[in-house]
Image (cartoon, rainbow, N blue to C red; front, side, top):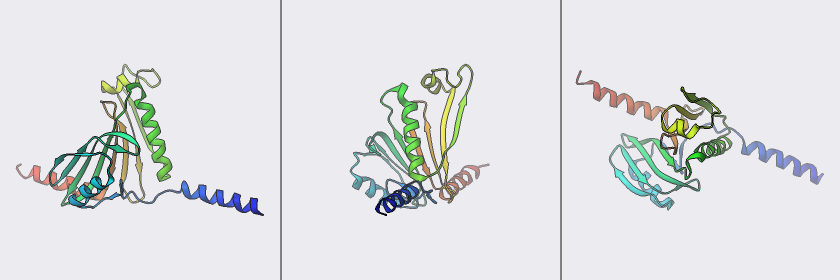
Length: 193
């Protein structure tokens, strides 16, 4: 009987750990919709070594720090009407040929955390092709694009991609707030026509 209860407990725990998350509310404990001052306060209180780099009403960026136990080049927080809508985290890949391995590792960790399988984007342009062994060079030169995105039931999106500098970029986005920001920015840009 004791073994049966232990077995059931393990099964229930494993089901709970891999259960799908219904919403993406932010990252680093910082919720979408937070004010600029709240974000700055929370980033500072995390003591992750981030240095304030740029501070505007619609954008706050930090250099250096740690994120999920990894070296981080920077973090960018985008706002509209003093509401956080997008968080970009740039992870450093210490060794160029290992950038794809780091990408796969982080993507797997995100998939386990949120219980969602990502949609993959792998685009190879000539002369590069999948499996040719030149993935880092192809990405640097702009011939290979590798990214994944996680669609959440609430409509929010988490994207992970390898940049041309071979860093790993994570983008957490509240699609409703971001869409509003883009619409208003486009409206402002188009009023001169």
